[in-house]
Image (cartoon, rainbow, N blue to C red):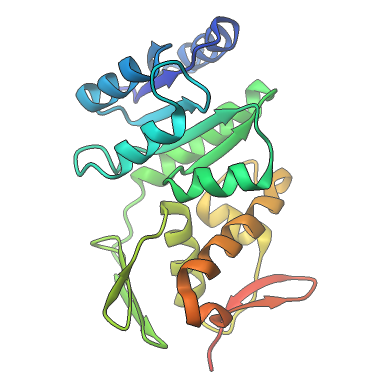
Length: 227
């Protein structure tokens, strides 16, 4: 069966382009233009991926994302936000709400298709290796998708979780921004290196007094402290 993709977008011309190209790729596509209808569709269909516009009638995209990610039935649905807002603050808010990817308009169709496929592949990946890491009072559990610091649970977005897991799995090893992007997103990473800095700032903020454990490696990227 082909993956089900739900597009929640109120602009007809943009929706037509997205739906046409997704169907051309062989996906089973559903489209809703109203926020409330889109949320209901996501809750009943449980799509394999949701493309979500930020500015919608009824309920805006941020609210929809928050509701999907706070519901046990829908929190595993990968969410890709589509928006004309390109500001760094808007990206941080989107990722903090649980978005897995953030695409600004206008966008190129083929890179968008690549990112959708990469996000679908990433959500289907199952790693049978070690599933719990502990270091410096931080415990990250990949099976239950949970992170704790000194026993207190931290609320991380899926992308923040994957980045933290990657760095903690090899403490002391510098990861380039491109490597972290490949881990968290997949294809079409080269044009999106700036996004990693947004995620790192958000992740450091959530780690509180352990923020210095994610070290900046000048000219390279980031690493999780071994000390």
